[in-house]
Length: 269
Image (spheres, rainbow, N blue to C red):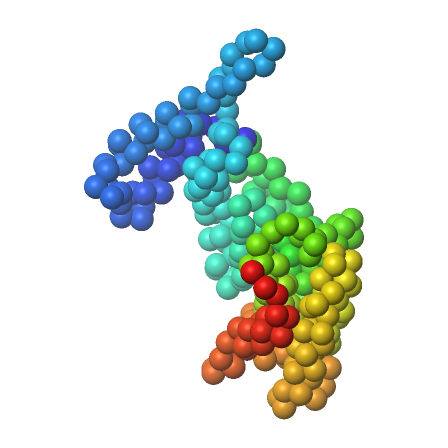
């Protein structure tokens, strides 16, 4: 939970450090006062009694999410500095963190123990290994190179918006487009891409997307025919390589594939 006053102090520190004295002609001291109203004047009724929130902010509020990100910016600075010295990779999405390290397991545990003491409101739950999930990406250390693929939680059901539901056509197109774009971007090798296509076929079949299976087959065949590599473990064109980026990566492979697929499905608005 966000400590309210401290969070607002960090908000002002963030703005000053990034060179802001005004934001859209609003002075930062006024911004703090306005933010104070938003964060503190949250009230609700329970069993005919009024309550006011005294720690944290309203769940689902865009401002609360932004403030939480800025609060984490302050918290992570010590950790990021240490990782930057050794030229490691660090990434964060809200309260999910990923980083690489060549230190011993004991050193990593010690670093995370110290990070747990940065602030009493933040406690880390760690997962350390040569392969770890981060959000919807599965990341592996393969002989010093990072390989990625789509991560599926074991307990997650393969549900998307059912094809027979009463939604506009663009909702179904976006569902398919997003799944294919993610598969291309996340799959380091052709073998991993093929496995994700198999998962997508099952998911779409389960949710009534019968018309998309022919489209997926077209994509599957078109990828196989790309005359780039013949080996199953060769890099898939258009994917992100975290260790050795190519000088001239193929142009928008995922966009071309997704567009081809969507044209084939012929889903009507």
